[in-house]
Image (cartoon, rainbow over all chains, first blue to last red; front, side, top):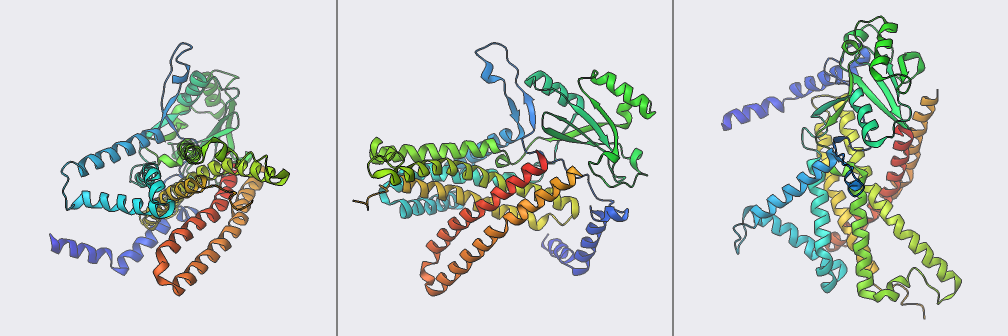
Amino acid sequence: MNKILSTLSKIILNPFFLGSLFILSILGGGLGAALDLGFLSAPFAYISIPAETLYYFKSEGFLFEFLNSAITNTLLMSLFTILTLTTISVIATKKMKIIPTGLQNLIEFAIEAMYNTCKKIAGEEKGKVFFPLVMTLFLFVVISNWMGVLPGTGTIGRIETAEEYCHHQKEENNLVHDVEFKIYKSNGKLASTMFGYGTDDYLMKSEDEKLFKNDDIAHSKDSDNLICSHHWLEHDFADAKKIRAEELGVQNFDEHYKVGILVPFFRGTNSDMNTTLALAICAMVCIHWWGFKYLGFSGHAGKFFNFKNGPINFFVGILELVGEFAKVISFTFRLFGNIFAGEVLLFAMAFLLPLIGIIPFIGLELFVGLIQGLIFSMLTLVFASIATVEHNSDDH
Amino acid sequence: MEGDILNLGAGLAIGIGAIGPGIGIGLLGAKAMEAIGRNPEAAGPIQTNMILAIAFAEAIAIYALVVAILIKFV
């Protein structure tokens, strides 16, 4: 076994092997597609900022209006994160020993390190109070970030066709005012269609490549490349497709222009702004709760509505109030931006350099995930310890 | 044409927006290194504070990124 492994690692670490793999990935990837190669390249993934919906709830009745929601792939991922954390903690604490070994040791190390940091930054007494929230945020953010890098997240899913999409939008949201449905020519590899409702544009990928093999027109959203366009409200979808098929001179529209977007089953939890906003709001509510608890109502509210020390301090107080909302926004966008940008980076690298291009960036994403979790929890801790300290103690 | 200008705008938004945070993070890193060099025992707290300060500087780059994403996709 060891012999096989060592031979394998020798082959993999061989400069010639690595070099040829690199050249192969450059030629076969998105860069090679410009030279009519690109034999390994996949279509560039459609990047959607809102989380893709897997299942819609539709409930009747006034009381159940709030149940009219959707299960998104990021929600599913966050549930799996919670499940993972629960499982790990149950396994780690099942057979507790005085001298910890294995998993229990690891968990104890992590918890102890964070506990000591809390006590160091916020003080002995407050650190104990702040620790549960800080540790929870840290564990949730880090584990969900790392699960977002797992192979299969964002890549395995089902194809949602244009009809399904329109149907969902019409049924669930009643938001379809004017869906425009367009098909564009592309650079021989793939055709893309775009259809939007409201201000959103949805780019869809054709599974049929043959039709466009001879078209070497660069993929763009220019009107020159438009070969099909119709408005949803003009006709029923099926009628419109029949008409387009006749105009394009093909027998069956679906056979030639089978389109859809990939809806992944799993997607990194924090690449959904709803999750990060929820975490940020939870953190800020707790921080202000502690502020009121330690300083009393007038003590904490007095920082923001300061009527005592003249107009300048009043405006400083109002600015601080605005700053509290800015904290929520910066919490939200810092985590969302980092994780979402990481996902787009992985997509882009998998497109440009298939096979090997993604490997160093997975390492980078693991690091970024850890650092973002650390930053989120540390900032919560620091803001909490600032909020529980009397601000204007120095002006008499 | 419109799409081209949108792409240019998105590129410029993140490109120009990343200059300031880049300089800021560089300064923070340099000063933290200097501090650790002067006082190696204080490396732990310096690192924690440096990462926190970098997070604040980086937040501005993230705002630029969000603007770029909004220009490009919305």
